[in-house]
Amino acid sequence: MEEAFNASDFIREIVRDDVKGGRVRQVVTRFPPEPNGYLHIGHAKSIFINFEIAREFGGKTNLRFDDTNPLKEDAEYVKAIQEDVQWLGYQWDGMFFASDYFEEMYQRAVLLIQKGLAYVDDQSADEIRETRGTLTEPGLNSPFRSRPVEENLVLFEQMRHGQFADGAKVLRAKMDMASPNLNLRDPVLYRISHALHHNTGDTWCIYPMYAFAHPLEDAIEGVSHSLCTLEFKDQRPLYDWVVRECEMPHVPRQYEFGRLNLTDTIMSKRSLKQLVDEGLVDGWDDPRMPTISGLRRRGFTPEAIRSFVRELGVTVAGGEVDYKLLEHHIRQDLSPKVPRAMAVLRPLKVIITNYPEGRVEMMDAEVNPEDESMGTKQIPFSREIYIEQEDFMEVPPPKYFRLFPGNEVRLRNAYFIRCEDVVKDEFGRVVEIHCTYDPETKSGSGFSGRKVKGTIHWVDGHTAIPAEFRLYEALLKGTEEELSPSVDLKSRLNPKSLEVLHGFVGKDLEKVAAYDKFQFVRQGYFQADPKDFRSDRKVFNQIVSLKSSYPMK
Ligand code: ATP
Ligand code: MG
Image (cartoon, rainbow, N blue to C red; front, side, top):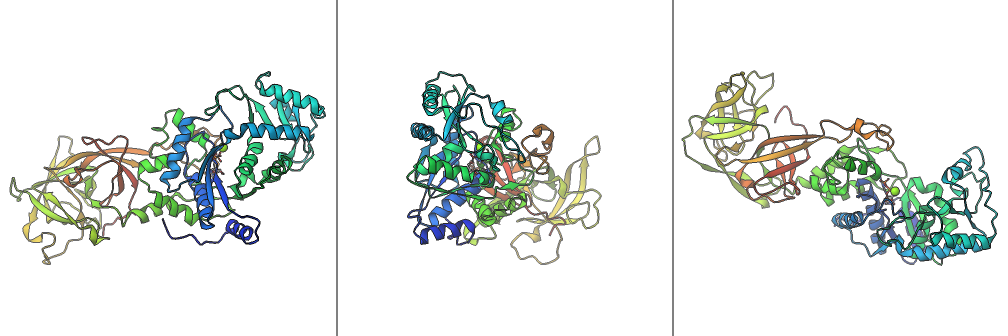
């Protein structure tokens, strides 16, 4: 892994003080996803913070599934989340499920009832919402608020045993309906839901709410620092109340940091699930998705994602991060590591008229100019080659240094060629060009007779392997508000988010396997798609473009 992260931020300050002051003997953090979807790049930030901080202080990190809502959760997500966390480079010390603690949570709720701190409320969800008050007005006490303890105990037990329908009753904390913090106005602790749970089946028909369950989960596991995103800040007093009033022997503390938001990116699992369910993308791992599995399929590396979230740091401030920063990190990571190769995405055939028919020459090509130890490879060259359509113009604009009638360019790793003639079809479109080559100009021969301004890439025509290239743009377009979970996502879809091209790669890519990554010269970084790639069907996903290079160097 990368060098230790010695940054200082407000959370690390707190942890350091707690350890120094002896308040905390062992640092224990947790990453607590709800298994109701796949992880996204925002979760990577949380994973990074939780695992790295614990590691720096010699502590532990749990993976805990916060599975308290059976209607939305699924074992498929549990599996996918584990895979993604490990792929990001982290191994949890313990893996737990909130549902394993349902019995203990129930007993703690009974304790609250016995202490006169919780009551069964017969009001409907709507009534509870309507009597909650506003920021300027206090709420109204429920008519059931002063139910005797004995009655509450009986009713709560009946709730557990399935004697009431969904929504007929809830268990609420008896706190303060006039509290300026709306979270403390008798929050709901338990609701009835006759649903099958992915882990506990039909054992339970009442389920704890997040605000009650989360602090108990942390306390049961001995979590020292419960790190979460800012929207939970106002819940902190409730968190502390639950731990205290439930008389948990271990006292965890909650701290909040800023959520990651990316430009043109939607991050809520609910919205991402909608894209999947409506068939607007090719599953959770569609390469345009901001999910970890989508980024992996696209060709991102765990190293790049980690260095991206490391650069973000642990700030409280929110705000959108430019997607370009993530792209910067993947380029930084791939550039020294991956082989260069030539691929032609939009092919135009070139015949080199003075090159002997049937002759094949092997040309030397550096695998990666940034790393000599990666050596050289041999690529075939013959009378027919493919170049990019955009590397030829019949009528060139000023400063166009590529091929046009009469002009000479360098073929990377091969010869200089000069355009002599153009072949058109019946509609006047250029379908083939004829060139001559100069045998003196072979790459590596030290030829210094004259210079040309343009160098273009190519693929040998006789050995070219057909390939599909998938180019991506942002899946959605819009400002932060325009992409909020409440908008109609369909209206925000970018019609240009996927472009499929059919071109060629060279024979040097004959043995390519899923997940292999390349820099296609002048085109960008690509990965062999792990889902659709077969030995007879080469599919490459563009991970990220190179920086724009026009006019060509
Ligand atoms: P979503 O709204 O995407 O469903 P969530 O917060 O409901 O996200 P959880 O599964 O509850 O998802 O999240 C697990 C942990 O990841 C939580 O501690 C949460 O705060 C954190 N997390 C989720 N989204 C982000 C984000 N965009 N940036 C940083 N941390 C995040
Ligand atoms: Mg959630």
